[in-house]
Image (tube, rainbow, N blue to C red; front, side):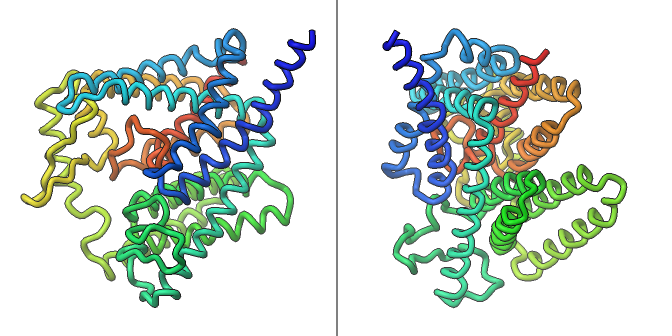
Length: 402
């Protein structure tokens, strides 16, 4: 009897303390610390390990319920992508399978937190947004005041190490403004949802200040796709909140977006979408060489716009899926998306807002980036895997209700 009680106490500790703390370290750590160092080991210990322990302790309960329906289809798609490494130019199938397992186990942990520890999940999400807002201010001060860069200078071109707490070549985990913008847009989306949800005035003010500093850094990073995503997400929330009255807000958002893009082209004419069309055309023709099963995950597409350096990136998530996994891979992920949308259409509650904002995010945020398809916890998770885990967690919860 004591053995059973002890087991339940440990299980409660894992789900109520270890996993929530691990999620906070995952969100903040991937934003602040370089993932290519020893930090990835910390992530495995504080988040992946408790998720795995909790799964094994409840494999006949929550585990059995989770790995079914749309989630099972998503797991098959992820592992197909990992196994495709076997026929790539640089096969490393065991490593890719390990990363796929990490993604799947992490998804299970986030499902448990959202559906069984939602209050804790909310606090962690809000706290992470506030911390990212603070770091946004610190980085802006560091770059533009501490180093006297003009405001028209793109953050963080010519990155610095003024405070001695970042890597000299970049800020924290990021090595280009595009990846930084995607991560910031993730936290903007997360913060905006809880800003609308909370009723506490003090919390609303704190989130508003945090979102404002994040938005400022997104603007200074001068990435057009991030600006477009902010406009889309803001428009979505305006429509949800104000319905017919949202037309003026939408017009204001569109006007601000247009002025921002005009500003970008004024100060930096060859930014954002430069060479994108040529990169996409080359990626598509490479896909046509092996259209059914793709070139396999592992090698890199030899893309060289205008005869320049090889970029090894399709700069579009859908072209990346086609190049690496072919039509079969794209079809598998399309079926996952359609299954989630079909499930969501049957629901008529507040959870739809949470679901739809992340669906919009996943569909559009990587239109100009094709990295991180099967990767260990890193900056790419902000634009693909963590939002996908949110979607699968909500979808599976709805499926279990029916």
